[in-house]
Image 1: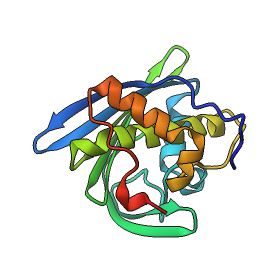
Image 2 (image 1 turned 45 degrees about the vertical axis):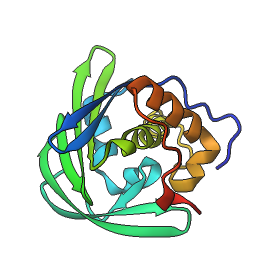
Image 3 (image 1 turned 135 degrees about the horizontal axis):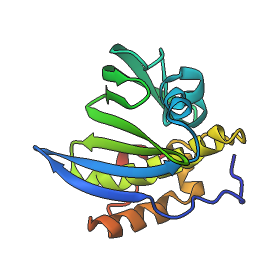
Image 4 (image 1 turned 30 degrees about the vertical axis):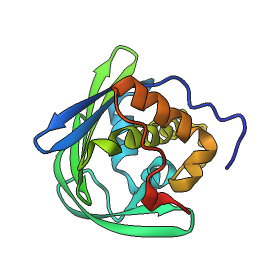
Length: 186
């Protein structure tokens, strides 16, 4: 897609919390759509393929094992996952490799308050994860608005403001700016 008109917009509400021996990024985004529509975007494999950094081998709206395939250009990597909690349309929690993602959806007068809590192994991942989810959630919002754009995944994110977002989230959260993760070098 490399659309020069793409605008990632302002930073989301964000926090970084210690979670036992791990770290949790908490991102909050207000969406103009009801929780049921947002839930479908979070769980339906056809919709996930259009905005998320991975595809899913099944609908994530029920508990049980799943395979989430991380996409980076032509490279795909299967990671074992499992949906631990699925309470439509308010709570979805699953593992993705060693990470844990918890999506909370709360109805508002104008749509949904989406809260993502993404738990990772190291604090050095938090700003990188924030920048990546920021871009993905902007793409998801386009999809929800009925004006889909191509997914922004992997190294391609560098063409859409990932580095600037990473720096801004690192500053906002008081974290070191570790730059692009080494394992994502192309």
